[in-house]
Amino acid sequence: MKNIVILVSGSGTNLQRIIDSIESGDIQNAKVSLVVADRECYGLERAANHKIDNVLIPRGKNFSSELDKIIPQDTDLIVLAGFLSILKPEFCENWNGKIINIHPALLPKFGGKGMWGMNVHHAVIEAGEKESGATVHFVTSGIDEGEAILQKSFEVTENDTAETLAEKVHLVEYEIFPTAINKVLGN
Ligand code: GRF
Image 1 (cartoon, rainbow, N blue to C red):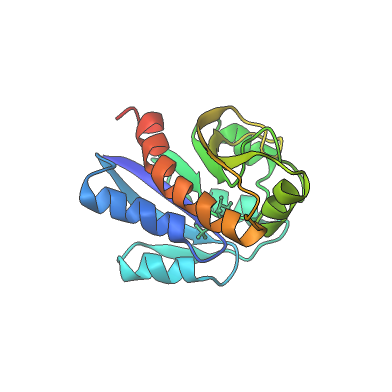
Image 2: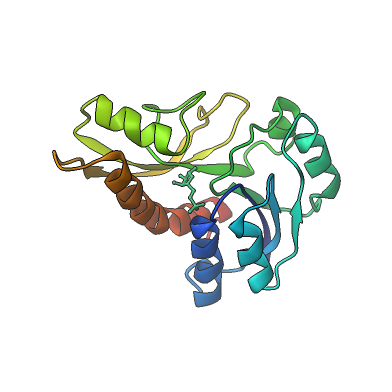
């Protein structure tokens, strides 16, 4: 049984998707052993609803070292699912190859500092992109720079707004995140 720790900052619909995929057997041989949030958010409640251990470590310069203290050493995978803090380089190095993130765009485009949440979708619209999508990638110390694991795109139409893109991207995320997790776990 592989142990997954999930980090969240927000509503946690991707967290929910992962929990549901484990319960339905779409992700096999794995359990969510801990959910960690860097702020009060609904993601913590989702974990509690499924009786998953959950903890709040306030965001800030000590986040990574506090996380290091509580994360079970037998953790096989750390999943960033709508997580907004930047993890310290030492933490990323210690867990190299075992941290993955989902990004709401087609990396390497629209990644890096400031490219989070709705900022990404506004930037895609402003750039007049013909497609957008989501990327699951390994986390390294460079923001959004780790190797891509899975990516899926869709067409951006002239009626799309940042809001409609956010909805469409979420649907793509729900599709590729469980597949990417299976891939990394070797399922
Ligand atoms: C997702 O679009 C994810 O790509 C981005 O933040 C959003 C989180 O959504 N990093 P949710 O909290 O999983 O609903």
